[in-house]
Each structure stands twice: as structure tokens, then as C-alpha cells.
Image 1: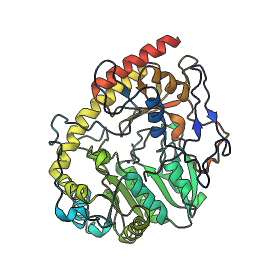
Image 2: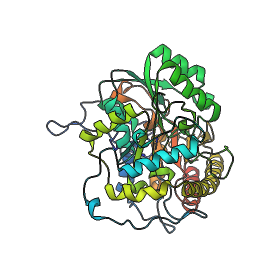
Image 3: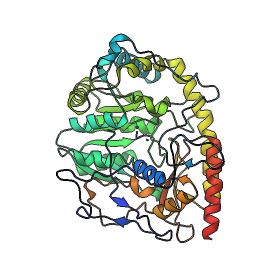
Length: 454
């Protein structure tokens, strides 16, 4: 949705590096009473991306100004490049607003868009299967975080598993709703962040999990559960009655599957769309490269869709009606295949460029990303002063390069591990969402930065 990103509720990040000396290697850990808020309001932490963009702005960064030798290189961005790609369908540059589009959209979304989304899943993943999605299996939201917030608000008194590391926005989301209890599940870099079906069964049974939230492919590591393994995950969820909440916002950015337009979804392995405990989140944000439209959706059993739509009635009231209507033709299967094929060609090349460039800089990559447009790397072997995520981030700002410290992905609802060093304090997330020219420029600047510390 993982997905920038992708509720837009701000999540966490109690951990803020001070605007301090360049050589400082550890972030300051702020306790809950160290910052005062106004009256009845608490200090709401910011997501990793929002935090780093705020700090970059203080250093002179301005969004949308990304050309020329002096331009900033935004390797922290959570969105793909949104312009024309070779072989992709023409970009939508105008939206017609009909008279009744001035009115509110239904909270669950326009019926015709819900039908188009259901048809897309059936055609892409469920050909020949007797159980098929309908419009009643779809709820439309105004953004990825909004769809996740609706689902979180609809959860009951359960243990909800979540992986470490994972999408930064999950942190505050998992803390703000108090009916369920968030249970962390550790992924190990030494194992390439692998998590077997046997591991999954043990976690569900041993911790009494009623649901698991995961981005697949994972933001930030790019680890992807696919094929027979994903089928086994869905089967385990069905056998143990544990709801799988799949954030699939990067499901068209998958590498190594073969074919010109590879896509993968848990929807392919659902047996009964109204009985299997599988809920999917996706939208135009990443896979269609229209993040500014804020058109996303939830797909799942009708009973779940009724619940999340009811939650939307008091949380957000529904999304934009004109943008939902404009989204309908984008769900046409031929359009999707052409767009995905173009994404695959362009982003596979940028992935290779980023991996090769980071390794030449001495940045250790635990596992090459199988999905997303991120590389999660360790800077621990770099010179002192830039060998942890926050100091590297601070130094990179001086060279007009934006990255995200890995510590932000150590999802920690309620700051229950507030005074314990993060396992990912030496990691950094690098985005290859920007254009190739910007990536090349950024790698050159980071090389110069690292040499200055040698």
C-alpha cells in the first residue's frame, strides 16, 4: 500500500533527529511529555515521508522543481513518476464534470466504478472461477490511507499482526483505534525478510491472531509473496479463520514473474469471494500512476464491504465524485495491460540502475526488491558520521538528495519500544520512483558526499 506513499492519517515517528551537527549518529528519542501540545490536542507524529519532506523544505526543497543541475533529487518520494512513459496509454489531462457530479458521491463509491473494479479483478485474476466479485464486493475511498482507516475502524476486539519492517503509515493507524491489539511480527534481514507458510501458521496459532495487515509487495523491502506461496497464505487464512489484509498498492511493480505486464493479487487464490477472509486494498495511486486523484478501493466479502462503508460514513464521507467517474475507463483491461507493460519496462531498468549504484557506494542491500520501487539498504559500513539512517539522511540533504531513514519503518504503535534502539537504525529507503535522470544525478551526489567523509 502498502503504498507514498497509498488513511492519510499521519503516523508515527516520535524519533526525530535534531537539526544538529553533521557528525551526530543517533537520533534523539523524545518522551511523551517532552513536547507540549495546545490544550486538549496531542502531538500527532508524522509519517516518515512527511517528516523528511518537511526537513527538506527547511533546506530549500520545493515540490515540482526537479529539472536542471541544481534541482533536488527526491529519493524519498512515495509516488512513481507520473508523466508519459514509452508505450504507455496517453495520460489523462482533463476531467469533465457533469452537473450531478457537483453532488456528494455515495460513501461506498459510484456504482459504475465499483462494477468496473469488480470486473477488472474477475478478468485479471478469476477467469473460469465460479465465485466472482460484484460491485457489492467493492468500496471506493478517497486515498489509500482512507481505505486502511475504514478497515481499521471496522475491526473488532482481536489481535492484529503486523510485520517489521513495513509501511510507516501503519504505526499511528494501529494505535489510534483501541478495539484491536497490534502484535508485531519480526522479519529478519539475514533471511532476506522471508516468512514461510509454516511461520505464518505458528504466528496465527501461537499469538491468537484474528487478522494480519501486510503490504505485498512490501514497502520498504520490496519482498513479494507470490504464486504458490501466496496461494498457501490465502489457504492458511481460510483454514485458520484469520483475515488477511493485503495492501496491494504496488502489485503492478513486480519483477521476475515473466511476461510483458506482470500483476499479482491474492484475489487469484480466493475460493469464495464472500467467505474467504481476504481483504485487498489498491487504487490509482501507484499502479495507474495517478496519486493526485485520490481514488482507491477495498475489495473483499460483502459483509466486510458493508462494514468499511459504514465506517466511511463517519470517518471521511466518501471520495471525489468527478474523479471516480473519470477513473472508470482506466479499469479497461487493455488499458491496464498497456500501462503495466510500460511500468515494467521503465521501472525494471531503474531498479537495476539503483541497485548497481548503491552497491558501488558501499551500501549493503539485504535483498534485491522483487516489487515496489524502493531499495532498502544498510549504510552501516560507510564512514563514521553517515553510517546510520538519520545521519545519512541529514548529510544527503546538504547535497540536495532526499532519502528516508529506515527507522521509520520499524512500526511501533503506542511507542511501546520507545527507548529501545531500532533494528533498522542503520537502514535507509531509496526510491527509484523519480525519472532516470534524477536517479543518476542523485547517485553521483551521494558518491561525492561519501567521499567527503572518507
